[in-house]
Length: 238
Image (cartoon, rainbow, N blue to C red; front, side, top):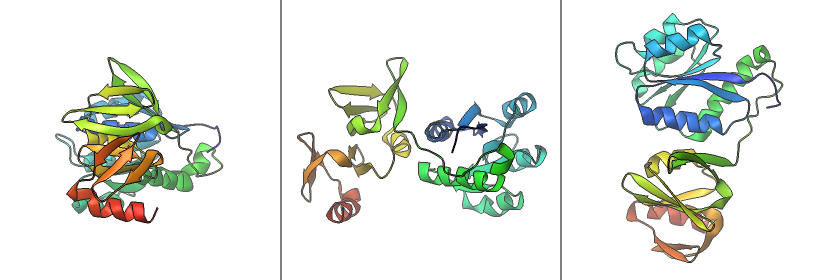
Protein backbone atom coordinates (compact mmCIF):
# COMPACT_ATOMS: atom_id res chain seq x y z
CA UNK A 1 0.00 0.00 0.00
CA UNK A 2 1.51 3.38 -0.95
CA UNK A 3 1.86 6.12 1.62
CA UNK A 4 -1.60 7.68 1.83
CA UNK A 5 -4.25 8.31 4.43
CA UNK A 6 -3.94 5.42 6.92
CA UNK A 7 -6.74 3.03 7.85
CA UNK A 8 -7.80 3.81 11.42
CA UNK A 9 -8.77 0.73 13.43
CA UNK A 10 -10.52 0.20 16.75
CA UNK A 11 -10.21 -3.10 18.64
CA UNK A 12 -13.11 -4.11 20.89
CA UNK A 13 -12.82 -7.36 22.87
CA UNK A 14 -13.25 -8.20 26.54
CA UNK A 15 -10.26 -10.58 26.44
CA UNK A 16 -6.91 -8.84 26.87
CA UNK A 17 -4.91 -11.51 25.04
CA UNK A 18 -7.26 -11.33 22.05
CA UNK A 19 -6.81 -7.56 21.83
CA UNK A 20 -3.04 -7.91 22.11
CA UNK A 21 -2.85 -10.47 19.31
CA UNK A 22 -4.88 -8.29 16.94
CA UNK A 23 -2.87 -5.20 17.80
CA UNK A 24 0.39 -7.07 17.20
CA UNK A 25 -0.84 -8.35 13.82
CA UNK A 26 -1.94 -4.86 12.77
CA UNK A 27 1.43 -3.40 13.84
CA UNK A 28 3.07 -5.46 11.09
CA UNK A 29 1.12 -3.64 8.37
CA UNK A 30 2.02 -0.30 6.92
CA UNK A 31 -0.68 2.36 6.62
CA UNK A 32 -2.89 0.70 9.24
CA UNK A 33 -3.16 2.42 12.62
CA UNK A 34 -4.80 1.24 15.85
CA UNK A 35 -6.56 4.24 17.36
CA UNK A 36 -7.57 2.43 20.56
CA UNK A 37 -8.07 -0.98 22.12
CA UNK A 38 -11.18 -1.35 24.29
CA UNK A 39 -12.42 -4.06 26.64
CA UNK A 40 -16.09 -3.09 26.34
CA UNK A 41 -18.58 -1.37 24.06
CA UNK A 42 -19.05 1.69 26.29
CA UNK A 43 -15.40 2.71 25.93
CA UNK A 44 -15.60 1.97 22.22
CA UNK A 45 -18.59 4.30 21.79
CA UNK A 46 -16.55 7.11 23.35
CA UNK A 47 -13.71 6.64 20.86
CA UNK A 48 -16.09 6.49 17.92
CA UNK A 49 -17.72 9.73 19.07
CA UNK A 50 -14.41 11.58 19.32
CA UNK A 51 -12.14 10.06 16.68
CA UNK A 52 -12.14 9.01 13.05
CA UNK A 53 -12.55 5.23 12.85
CA UNK A 54 -12.58 3.27 9.59
CA UNK A 55 -12.61 -0.35 10.77
CA UNK A 56 -13.65 -2.01 14.04
CA UNK A 57 -12.29 -5.42 15.00
CA UNK A 58 -15.29 -6.46 17.07
CA UNK A 59 -15.78 -9.43 19.36
CA UNK A 60 -19.36 -10.70 19.31
CA UNK A 61 -19.73 -12.40 22.68
CA UNK A 62 -19.16 -9.54 25.17
CA UNK A 63 -20.87 -8.70 28.48
CA UNK A 64 -23.50 -5.93 28.79
CA UNK A 65 -23.56 -4.90 25.11
CA UNK A 66 -22.92 -7.64 22.55
CA UNK A 67 -20.91 -7.08 19.41
CA UNK A 68 -24.04 -7.55 17.31
CA UNK A 69 -25.88 -4.80 19.20
CA UNK A 70 -22.84 -2.54 19.00
CA UNK A 71 -22.51 -3.04 15.25
CA UNK A 72 -26.18 -2.20 14.71
CA UNK A 73 -25.81 1.07 16.62
CA UNK A 74 -22.78 2.63 14.92
CA UNK A 75 -22.57 4.65 11.72
CA UNK A 76 -22.63 2.42 8.64
CA UNK A 77 -19.57 4.29 7.33
CA UNK A 78 -17.58 2.44 9.99
CA UNK A 79 -16.90 -1.06 8.72
CA UNK A 80 -16.85 -4.10 10.99
CA UNK A 81 -14.61 -7.16 11.04
CA UNK A 82 -16.13 -9.58 13.55
CA UNK A 83 -13.83 -11.67 15.75
CA UNK A 84 -15.19 -14.58 17.76
CA UNK A 85 -14.55 -18.09 18.99
CA UNK A 86 -18.03 -19.21 17.91
CA UNK A 87 -19.04 -20.20 14.38
CA UNK A 88 -22.74 -19.88 15.27
CA UNK A 89 -22.66 -16.09 14.90
CA UNK A 90 -21.49 -16.09 11.28
CA UNK A 91 -24.91 -15.60 9.72
CA UNK A 92 -25.76 -12.66 11.97
CA UNK A 93 -22.38 -11.15 11.23
CA UNK A 94 -22.77 -11.24 7.47
CA UNK A 95 -26.38 -10.02 7.68
CA UNK A 96 -24.89 -6.84 9.11
CA UNK A 97 -22.67 -6.62 6.02
CA UNK A 98 -19.47 -7.16 7.96
CA UNK A 99 -16.26 -6.98 5.94
CA UNK A 100 -15.21 -10.34 7.31
CA UNK A 101 -15.74 -12.84 10.12
CA UNK A 102 -12.60 -14.12 11.86
CA UNK A 103 -12.56 -17.18 14.09
CA UNK A 104 -10.20 -17.22 17.06
CA UNK A 105 -7.35 -17.89 17.35
CA UNK A 106 -6.75 -15.36 14.59
CA UNK A 107 -3.61 -15.78 12.50
CA UNK A 108 -1.76 -12.88 10.94
CA UNK A 109 -2.47 -14.19 7.44
CA UNK A 110 -6.21 -14.35 8.08
CA UNK A 111 -6.34 -10.85 9.56
CA UNK A 112 -4.32 -9.47 6.67
CA UNK A 113 -6.76 -11.06 4.22
CA UNK A 114 -9.66 -9.33 6.00
CA UNK A 115 -7.95 -5.95 5.73
CA UNK A 116 -7.11 -6.63 2.09
CA UNK A 117 -10.83 -7.25 1.56
CA UNK A 118 -11.62 -3.92 3.21
CA UNK A 119 -9.16 -2.12 0.93
CA UNK A 120 -10.53 -3.91 -2.14
CA UNK A 121 -14.08 -2.80 -1.38
CA UNK A 122 -13.59 0.59 0.26
CA UNK A 123 -10.05 1.56 -0.74
CA UNK A 124 -11.12 4.33 -3.12
CA UNK A 125 -12.84 6.06 -0.23
CA UNK A 126 -9.48 6.20 1.53
CA UNK A 127 -7.67 7.35 -1.62
CA UNK A 128 -5.58 4.20 -1.84
CA UNK A 129 -4.31 2.76 -5.08
CA UNK A 130 -3.77 -0.91 -4.22
CA UNK A 131 -4.89 -3.58 -1.80
CA UNK A 132 -1.43 -4.98 -1.12
CA UNK A 133 -0.57 -4.51 2.58
CA UNK A 134 3.16 -4.53 3.26
CA UNK A 135 4.49 -6.67 6.10
CA UNK A 136 7.17 -5.57 8.53
CA UNK A 137 10.07 -7.84 9.46
CA UNK A 138 10.06 -7.37 13.22
CA UNK A 139 7.91 -7.40 16.35
CA UNK A 140 7.97 -5.80 19.79
CA UNK A 141 7.86 -7.73 23.07
CA UNK A 142 7.75 -6.49 26.64
CA UNK A 143 10.88 -7.31 28.64
CA UNK A 144 12.37 -5.68 31.73
CA UNK A 145 9.70 -2.94 31.81
CA UNK A 146 10.23 -1.83 28.23
CA UNK A 147 9.22 -2.80 24.71
CA UNK A 148 12.06 -4.47 22.81
CA UNK A 149 12.23 -4.66 19.04
CA UNK A 150 13.15 -8.11 17.72
CA UNK A 151 13.92 -8.76 14.06
CA UNK A 152 12.41 -12.05 12.89
CA UNK A 153 15.67 -12.89 11.14
CA UNK A 154 17.51 -12.74 14.48
CA UNK A 155 15.29 -15.28 16.27
CA UNK A 156 16.89 -18.73 16.49
CA UNK A 157 14.32 -20.46 18.67
CA UNK A 158 11.74 -19.73 21.36
CA UNK A 159 11.48 -21.68 24.58
CA UNK A 160 8.44 -21.75 26.86
CA UNK A 161 8.46 -21.89 30.66
CA UNK A 162 4.78 -21.86 31.67
CA UNK A 163 3.79 -18.17 31.66
CA UNK A 164 7.02 -16.71 30.27
CA UNK A 165 9.28 -17.25 27.28
CA UNK A 166 12.94 -17.16 26.43
CA UNK A 167 13.48 -15.80 22.93
CA UNK A 168 16.94 -16.89 21.82
CA UNK A 169 18.43 -14.44 19.34
CA UNK A 170 21.95 -13.94 18.08
CA UNK A 171 24.24 -13.29 21.07
CA UNK A 172 21.35 -12.71 23.47
CA UNK A 173 18.30 -14.19 25.19
CA UNK A 174 15.21 -12.05 25.78
CA UNK A 175 12.77 -13.03 28.52
CA UNK A 176 9.14 -11.96 28.19
CA UNK A 177 6.01 -12.83 30.16
CA UNK A 178 3.83 -14.28 27.43
CA UNK A 179 2.47 -17.66 26.39
CA UNK A 180 3.99 -19.57 23.51
CA UNK A 181 0.58 -19.73 21.80
CA UNK A 182 0.29 -15.94 21.85
CA UNK A 183 3.79 -15.44 20.47
CA UNK A 184 3.20 -18.10 17.80
CA UNK A 185 0.26 -16.07 16.50
CA UNK A 186 2.55 -13.08 15.98
CA UNK A 187 5.21 -14.92 13.97
CA UNK A 188 5.18 -15.28 10.17
CA UNK A 189 4.33 -18.93 9.54
CA UNK A 190 6.63 -19.19 6.54
CA UNK A 191 9.66 -18.53 8.77
CA UNK A 192 8.92 -20.48 11.96
CA UNK A 193 7.92 -24.01 12.95
CA UNK A 194 6.27 -25.21 16.16
CA UNK A 195 7.87 -28.56 17.07
CA UNK A 196 6.78 -29.00 20.69
CA UNK A 197 4.44 -27.40 23.19
CA UNK A 198 7.54 -25.66 24.55
CA UNK A 199 9.54 -24.90 21.39
CA UNK A 200 9.24 -22.85 18.21
CA UNK A 201 12.23 -22.82 15.89
CA UNK A 202 13.34 -20.56 13.06
CA UNK A 203 13.43 -22.60 9.87
CA UNK A 204 16.48 -20.72 8.57
CA UNK A 205 18.61 -21.94 11.49
CA UNK A 206 17.90 -25.67 11.16
CA UNK A 207 21.22 -27.55 10.96
CA UNK A 208 19.96 -31.14 11.00
CA UNK A 209 17.07 -33.29 12.13
CA UNK A 210 16.08 -36.83 13.04
CA UNK A 211 12.70 -38.34 13.87
CA UNK A 212 13.17 -37.20 17.46
CA UNK A 213 15.15 -33.94 17.41
CA UNK A 214 15.93 -30.83 15.39
CA UNK A 215 19.28 -29.12 15.84
CA UNK A 216 19.43 -25.33 15.67
CA UNK A 217 22.43 -23.27 16.73
CA UNK A 218 24.05 -26.49 18.01
CA UNK A 219 21.07 -27.13 20.31
CA UNK A 220 19.18 -30.43 19.88
CA UNK A 221 15.52 -29.66 20.55
CA UNK A 222 12.86 -32.38 20.92
CA UNK A 223 10.02 -32.98 18.48
CA UNK A 224 6.94 -33.93 20.50
CA UNK A 225 4.54 -36.68 19.53
CA UNK A 226 1.76 -34.12 18.98
CA UNK A 227 3.71 -32.21 16.33
CA UNK A 228 5.86 -35.03 14.89
CA UNK A 229 3.75 -35.95 11.87
CA UNK A 230 3.34 -32.37 10.63
CA UNK A 231 6.92 -31.39 11.43
CA UNK A 232 8.52 -34.35 9.65
CA UNK A 233 6.23 -33.99 6.67
CA UNK A 234 7.16 -30.32 6.39
CA UNK A 235 10.90 -30.98 6.73
CA UNK A 236 10.95 -33.86 4.26
CA UNK A 237 9.20 -31.73 1.65
CA UNK A 238 11.01 -28.49 2.35
